[in-house]
Image (cartoon, rainbow, N blue to C red; front, side, top):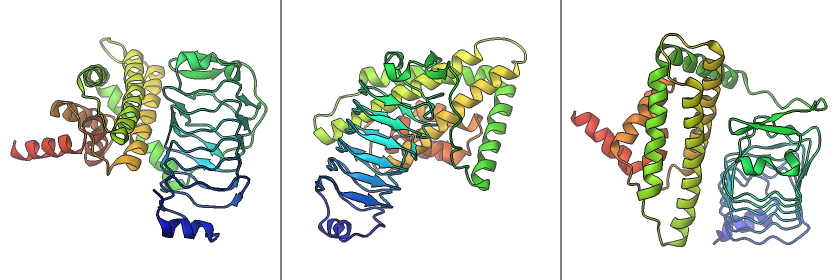
Length: 342
């Protein structure tokens, strides 16, 4: 239920809504919102049907069961995870749409000149009737093979779990470049990942396979919660694990088992998958770090996950934090205690 003071703040016309609780709030239809900052807002089960959003920032917002049907988004920003939301017949024009999208409906939605670099479609999305113009380039967008067969993606082939453009696209406006510090950090991450892979590509491959098997074990053995809220979170968590598993298997396939040095083309390919995986994990952790997962994954998985991420250039403490996704905060805590005791 939405916080009354936060609702009053929203209705007053305030544009800085960071961290507000607007869950289950129902906005009047056909409202026009300009330059609203929804970052880190709780928008679960909120309704914004037939609304117009212009230059609004939805990054890190908790968009779960949110209804944006028949709405228009002009130069808005979306990132991180969007779960079970409704964008039917909505129009996205300009801006960025690059969240990890799970169980969402985008039937008859339109994408016009949208930056989707980094977008990822997980399980259960509906895009029947959706269309996109030439300036919206889905190259590199990860999804299921079944989803890739929809008419909206007719100009793309499906390779290694992602779309590859097979027809020339019109020149589209350049997406905003990352800040110098962010770009330098990304370059250093790539260098670290490639150096680690050159040194021990077989070790990285075996870790990927081991983590993939652990994810499979979790999905088979983990109890499914009865509480509706926990069940919803559990389903999103499993969807995330499926996405992680895709990247892990892709890295293992690229590296393949071989003796001696590995060629640079495969090093570059594997490093790209690793950086994509780390971005996915970091985004999810930012959005969900305060939530507790009752996990039956062993402490050994946390150790393997931390070792893998550290191997690929992640600082040890960050790697431990990210590995919490794979085993839950309690398991990480037990792992750290065990390390201290050892």
